[in-house]
Image (cartoon, rainbow, N blue to C red; front, top):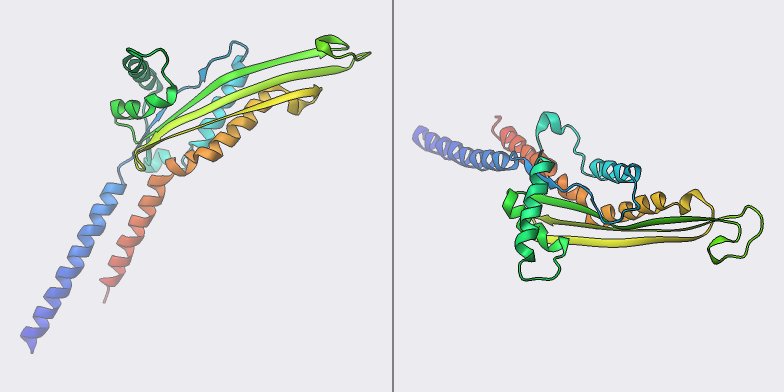
Length: 229
C-alpha cells in the first residue's frame, strides 16, 4: 500500500514538474521584448512646418507607448538613426530596375534587416493650406470674410511579424469653406492620423507582449496553486 502511494505521489510530482516546465518556458519566451522599428515621419510636402511634424510624431509616440516599459522591458525600440539607415538601404535595393518603389513594400525587408517584430512608418504625403480674404481665391465675397482651402493626406505602413503580414492604410482630409479652427490643415492632419492609428491597430500590436506575459504569469500561478496541498 505504501509502495503504491509512493508511486502515485511520484507520478503527481512528475506531472506537476512537466506542467511547471511548460509554464516556465512560456514565461521565458513571453519575456523577450518586442523589437520595435519606428520610422521617423516621412514628409513629402514642403508646406508642412516643424510644428505640425512634431505634433504628428508626438501623437504616434503616444499610440505606441507601453506603460511601465522602463521597468518591465516589454518593448525594445531600435534607435531611429539605425532604422533610417536600414530603410535607405532597403529602398535602394528595391529600386534597382524599378521606376518607383512604394514605402509599404519596404516594410517586411526592413523588419528582416533589423530583426524587428513590429515596424511602423508614418508618411505625410500631402499637406497644404491657403487662406483667402475678401474676394480672393475665386470667391466673390465683400468685406473681411476669410476663407480656407486646406487638405492633408497621410499613410501609415508597417509590418507585424507575429501575424507575418504588412499593414498599410492611407486617408485624406479636405476643407473648403469659411474660417474655422477645424478647417486648418494641422487639424485635418491630426484627424487623419487618428483614423490611421485606429485602422492599423498599432496600439494592440505593440501591447501584445504585455498581454502574453500576463497570460503566462496567470498559467504559472495556477500551476503553483495546484501544487499546494
